[in-house]
Image (tube, rainbow over all chains, first blue to last red; front, side, top):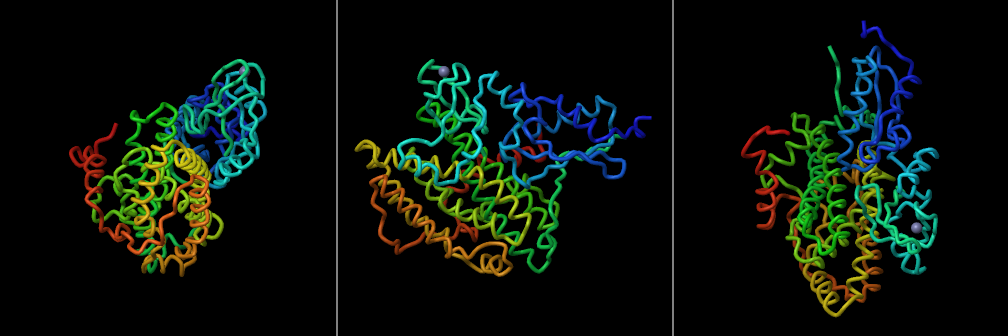
Length: 173
Length: 273
Ligand SMILES: [Zn+2]
């Protein structure tokens, strides 16, 4: 009888909000903004997912986890689609997710600070990066970037100069 | 029965993809985009586990990962345009050196950190301006969406490479010397980025890609600015330009990359895990 099951897209969105990001399990794939659309193509449920970074190894795992979740809910007529445009932006990360990232020890993205390709020059000329990231541990803004890249493609490595905590910053793209 | 087609793509309508008259040139051009990303990505990944400090090791590995992601998008589209059942993996793992279409610049050995970072910088500056044009102006929606995705990442690559060229160029006597040597070595290979041929002309005519020569000015401005800050001397206009990679005439170095990269699929066809 499962073939007649046709849950409303809103209900599917709720289910998908239970799917954690495999690398940052405190936030869900819907909170990160990578599930772009839930709709039906005839009897087939179609879920459109966008990659965070184009080479991110978590992409395939996320697809698998979404599929598992929906099958667990009794849906077996489904299709996942990869959607490239518009490209994923950290602007889509929800407020709740930003708070959870902070609790988890990851500084959330500072909107409007995505690289322009010429940002390094502007930063060198002004003598500062123009980006202030608060330490997720003590809240101090006396922090510095250690490296533009961190433990995963979406993060940069930072350090707090007050409490000395090294931390990840979820960089803006 | 379950019907699942993982990683199907929801893509914008694009009549160029099925345009038979454009097919040979479009396929070639997409292979050039994909192969530049693939071969530079492979070269960059050679630092994984060998970086001079942990942060640089991680940064280079992440950069390589981005480039491999771009490869999957460009070669994936190339396979679709070709229409003969080859996907990105088949194109990457089962073509011989003569069929590769990357610039000679990206296949040169990784050298020391100076050569690696100078090469990243010279290529990133080109890549950045090219992707910007494609994202904003390409009449092919498929090309434009891949470019827009890649551009976000390449902007970070260019930022990082510029920063390191300045820090190493304007660093110690030793780092300055190595960076100048790297620049002098690579300079004669950078000209190939701007030398168009009939494939490029067909892409320009179709409105898919820019006239490469038109990117040279912006590239030179970006490069000149950074080199000046890095206290490095920009070489005189190169009289001689090493070229031929885009047409499949490679240096002896490419074969060694492919031997390593393709070994598994060649020795155990179809192996997966
Ligand atoms: Zn702190």
